[in-house]
Image (cartoon, rainbow, N blue to C red; front, side, top):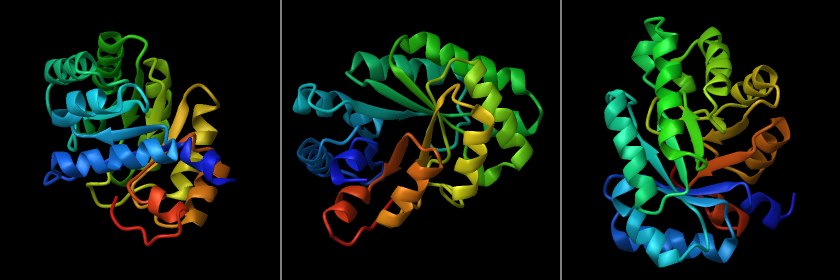
Length: 221
């Protein structure tokens, strides 16, 4: 893969709580210079980033982040507000405790409600793979696709681990093209990037890719 092909798959990400507007503006500049798929930032900066980039790069933001434990109404409000502020893509975190309690219908309905609230905008569903069994991951592949989301996503980058090759293989096998796949968290080398794409990832959530592709040391998410 060449640089342009890789960058077109990257959600250039900065979600640290201490990030300032100057930090966000810097990744917006990097995204525009490198033509990434989006910038993925916290909701408080969505409006500023959208106005700053003037449509050059889509703004992605996170909902129910990073725990997924807020109630559905709160997540729907967050998502609707983010879209009103200029976000084009929403990355939501599922209610992990509800899934582990066996309440799959609740998890599915929450995704349906958020997708309904944002309409044609892109919805990516973070299932936090490091906290799930393989059986739960397989269940979530069906749930995410059935609920009409656009992507299933591995990780927040704020739990015990990020994306693994095995998880992307599992997603690819179980989703069977019904939704797209995003690998996120812990992508630390160009070889990782290429391997994740080879295994079926359509998007890569990382703060490192721009530096790595430009031959610089990559640190962060």
